[in-house]
Amino acid sequence: MAQASHDIAVARTATRNDAGTHADSKLHYRDAAERIRAIIDGGRLSGPGRLGAGRLPSERELSETLGVSRRVLRQALGLLEAEGRISRQHGRGTFATDARHAQETLVHEMSRLTNPVDTLEARLAIEPMQARLAALRATKGDIDRLFEAADASRDAKDPLSYEKADAAFHRRVSAAARNPLLIAIFDAMLETALEGTWRHGRETAHCINNQAAYAADHRKIVLAIAERNAALAEQTMRLHLNSVQQRLIEHAFPGAAAE
Image 1 (cartoon, rainbow, N blue to C red):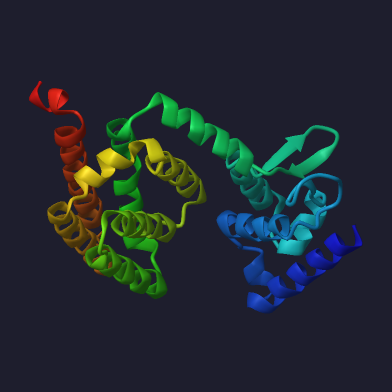
Image 2: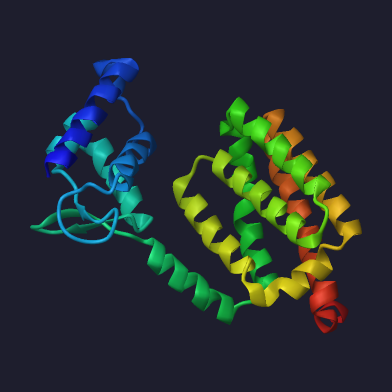
């Protein structure tokens, strides 16, 4: 508990030094959630359990630590609860949870019940919006890393290297969107898509000719994000994923493609 109090004191000092008391009172709930994640990930909360498990400070103490209103704090806690990072128990308090094991179990079950085309349909529902948000929210550093990731997908020398580069590119677009809940959903989809039982279909779809086309798509997506053209970023990501999906259908499910 003493260590947790120390961490909270450090967080309070950092908050005050960042921008002053008045500015901290307007801290966005997503920023507040990120600071709470840092406290949780320190693994020094009170109570027994796995790393990252234990009781969070009271709402009053967290509110003072972060320099936010109770309303903003509760929005942040609601976001973390939706992500599976915390559990709020009436009469007992708020506890950090380790959601990684649950996510691994979910991914395993999803991989048994779905296929690459199903996963692309889900990605089409989420990733174009993430590209739109990235065009609005990405920092210069985000954009620089996106260009690097696009180049890495172009320069990959074999299917496995390309697969890793491709996953890294799409993960960076997701991160640049700055929406933690969408990132968590995207990560679950990506892990499902990377299940080993799908490897043959993915490598067939990602032959060297397709790799060049996909890498060119990646660069177009980054250019739209860098230009802050949200509509174009969304459209380009959707066209890219549609192309990937069509090739998956043609190579992995030739019967379905003929219907």
